[in-house]
Length: 214
Image (cartoon, rainbow, N blue to C red):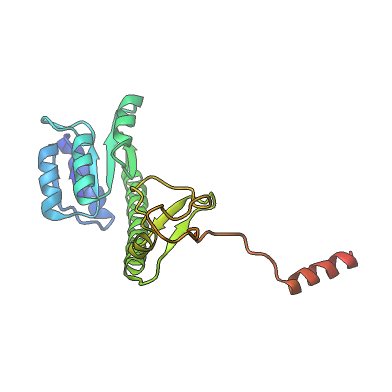
């Protein structure tokens, strides 16, 4: 864990809290610029970041740089809960806030939740990346859509077959789309959508029998 706190006594307390909980403290600093360098050097699992720091870079700017470049989760420490500060901090995607004054239980709760949340997000990201690689390598065209019939994904083969390469972030309603005019084919684009499953006939029969008995 990297600790970034401008009050030296409080920084020592935080270090003691973390070590008593079994966490290793990679480094302690009171400046945002140094915090960014230390994060790149030590690659900690978590950063405890005071919002008000010495120097030109405050904790929010330092936290944003660390998150954007290293994807290391940030927990902000602050004695200021004014709306403007929290709104600015929220844009940097922190995993938690700890308001001063705090004790070891506050540190423990925030750290455990942040690490657990980050681990879950990493698992989801790894599965998503694996699935994307599989779909990218398929020789068949794959087109997926949501329940509103808006296309959410086309793999390279689908783009090749349809001649359609929509810009990222611009969903298309697929139920009304046919292949682009430059294609000689006229069949509509087929979409994979999630639909509610229908009970089979046996299940329907069982349900009707139960209804007749009641």
